[in-house]
Length: 105
Image 1 (tube, helix red, strand yellow):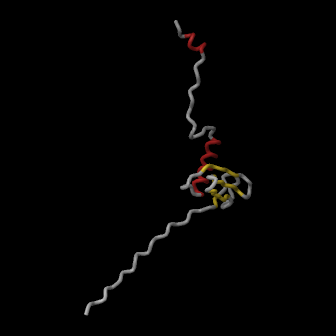
Image 2 (cartoon, helix red, strand yellow):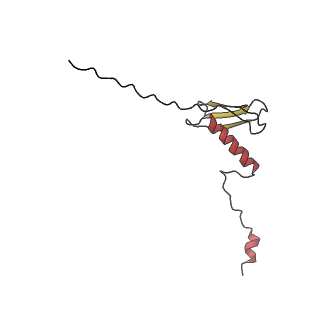
Image 3 (tube, helix red, strand yellow):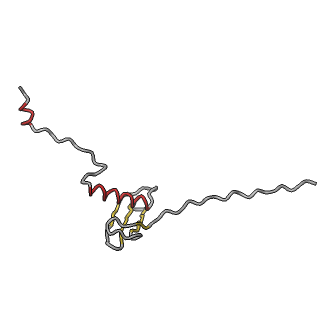
């Protein structure tokens, strides 16, 4: 007679923690007042505060999550406060023709 094999139980899979969908508003600082909604058909993500009615819309792709929309909103707020856009490159100003005439000897 053959012995019965012991069946090993499969290892339990660790679940990924769910990402938040509500955040603190950067304007009124109320906790969990900003909700992010994602419309994958229109490829638009929107973050809006229900306390102060501030909102932010951004184009999304298929990998975008609510935290990504919120972080882009924070980056846009910081860029507006520092008077410079992180994505915009500095364009050199053209030199006036009068400036060149001074050095044409």
